[in-house]
Length: 220
Image: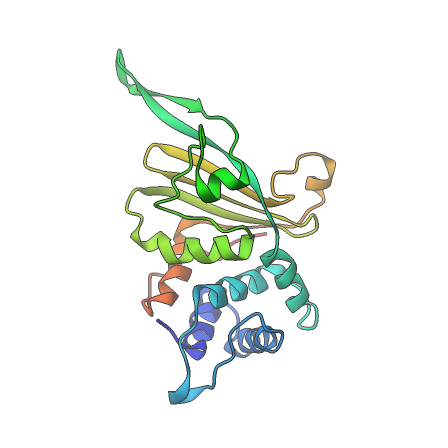
């Protein structure tokens, strides 16, 4: 696990920002109760997945230092709205052909606790009732999911909304928070920040105090 100082340095490198800029944002979150307070130096405590998730949201917001804590709190508390899931199935006559079978829509309770016709891999990647908790869970579990083939986190700034989508083994899933599943004219006016799998793996490595090759910076 990393200390706040180690987290700040690693995030500054990943997002191609100065260490001082990230440190100012991080301290602002701590002052607002969005990151656990910790002394610096040898007495520093280890950051949690929630701390890291909130710092990542802050770095995606492109907001002023004063406004960032409010944006982070807003996005962290976005409610789980539901989602969709599909399964890739082979065709006996041709093993190279894969059909995508859509399952019934996922409900918040189905994602969190399971249920009839609720095809969500809760044992592999548990979600939370909010986006902040779900992003934290993703950062905790992602390095251990060897069957994960694709994952993306999208933040829709002005709606606001968020979406976590992934393909785990033969299953494809999208999970929406707030207005993350919105369609229409408003979406075209929205600032969208996307984090891909390689970038998320590099962020997740911070929790374990490991370093991965630096990926491309996510684009808006």
